[in-house]
Amino acid sequence: MNFLILLTEGIGLRNFFMTRFLSLLCGEGEVVIWHALPEQIVHVHDHPAADRLRWQSMPEHHEGQLPFLFRRAKLIAQLYWQNEAGTEMVLKRTTLRGKGVYKLRNRLAEAIGRACGRSHNQILWLDDMHARAVRQSRYFVDFLKFLSFERPDVVFCTHQRSPLAVPAMLAARQLGIPTATFIYSWDNLPKGRMAVHADYFLVWSQHMKDEMRNYYPDVPEERIFVTGTPQFEHYFNSALFEPREKFLPSYGLDPSRPVVCFSGDDLDTSPHDPQYLADLAEALKPLPLSERPQILFRRCPTDAGNRYRPVLEKHPEIANVEPQWLILTNNDWSKVIPTQDDVKLLVNTVAHSDAVINVGSTMAVDFAILNKPAIYLAYNPSGWKANDGWSIEQIYRFPHFNPMQHFEPVAWCRSKEELCAVVIQSLRDPQCRAENRRAWVEFLAQTPLDQASNRCVEALVRISQKT
Image (cartoon, rainbow, N blue to C red; front, side):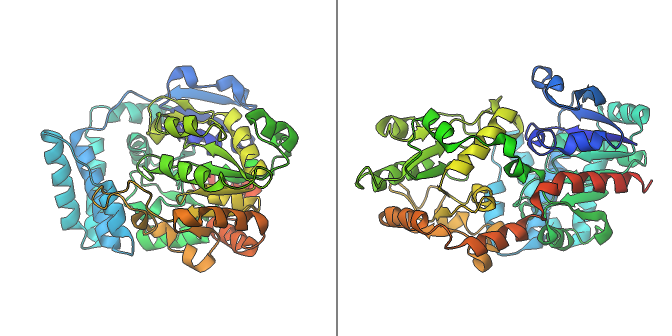
């Protein structure tokens, strides 16, 4: 069997190149990696299966105005058609501005999206118009030529939101080659029509499969595979763990005292994260040193700016544990490259922190996997203004938070004055929500979590055999 993997963004490396997935897939046949990464960061020899892989750069291409117009329109139409609790927040977050022709294009896409959001058939029409616009582009023939020569048994896209993958997936479909894509994150499906539409879909859980059936009723149930996500497999690899007595002192932390991890979000999700971090430091400072939890800070890997610098300079007691990602462009998930060093760093950060605190981050899931408590910040910080276009209430109205009301897996801090008490309570009684966390994790991702790569490979083998 021949497998072709589409790797258009660096974050796909974390799930499928830094886990057992690639080695398992190579055991089933030949693997070609068709990528859009800079050549200098393609670490071919860093993977154990490097001698069984072939890397090939994608043709240079940029999304044209017409493909962009229909892609945006179908995303917006999908949101209007969904019309569920929290959709208005997604629409607000996806609004694009611009100047001149770009402003007109964005407004036209929104107008078409609103007009076509009345029925699912109109959205399918936009899907078809988007595909036609891409097929008429000058670069499309290059994708046809490459796939005509390679003729893989299946084309697998590692991220369903990437516009760069669209011509490859459409070329495969035109040639009769089965296509599959992976739903990258727990919050992706409610965010509107995906850029990449495939023949088959790999999803995290039965819940995500139900979401697929709800948002994409045109996709037959048998074409959706519940695989889980490989991103959590690292927590079951004992070789990655360091002793607490080694890891914490390397960042100036005392292993005999509790550690609270403050994990930052991206700038759009939580623009006030520096203030929250300062609030945490100031809330804990009055405690006697022997009782005071230490703070380990891990910023969002895409947030490589200097917005935390004043807080870190004012509070040198905060241990700043820098993510080990290669940053090509700040605050752009498509231009950041995870590394194997960061996988180990993240595993030990979670293993040796006693709790995590943040604004609605998936890091709560990482901590839940190792049965560690999480705290979600749920108050507007000092300096916040009601007219600045952001509020904490808006964040937790996003649709992917709706199931949390049933599971209650995290503690909530609803004011700066509560911070110290909520943190101390979470540290003193870490098992308080243990069953809630376990149920939440099982709801979000297929178990056993450490077998996700196996299930992904099994799904691709089954798909390739359907031809």
